[in-house]
Image (cartoon, rainbow, N blue to C red; front, side, top):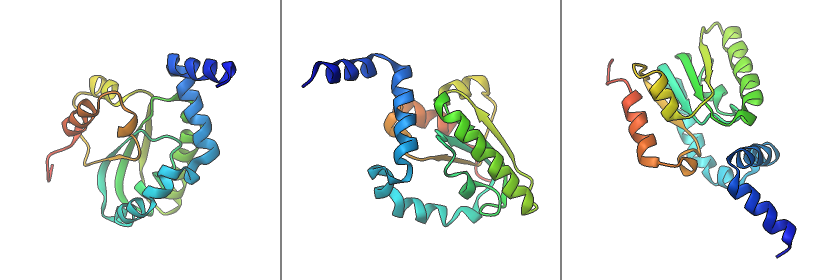
Length: 166
């Protein structure tokens, strides 16, 4: 193995910020062509086909570049009134903000009022910042594989989930 490759891998391993930049770059290059995304496509399509049944407040954990927003609000999910996008990787914020603006515009064209907001931190930071927030729906796509503590993330989601009918 070349010294440059070893040094590059060591740098990525040592620097969280470089890993975030690297991941955002490769996601922009591969996007929907990433093998894991392609393999998950049938399940994703089945779930999103039911998005018209969604209603109330929706929390998307790990929004990335906002690729799912068109399915989670607006004409595809006309009863969703608020979407909070949690994304800690600031390299995803520019495309996510563009996707949010587009989703907001498409919803308005369809006569649907939906509020969209970015929380630029982790799920746990959101729970600490807004401990009384509750959501009717919590969506995650290809996220739990990259959180440091899956049990904590699932517990945080459970804490944020509104009770049935409430």
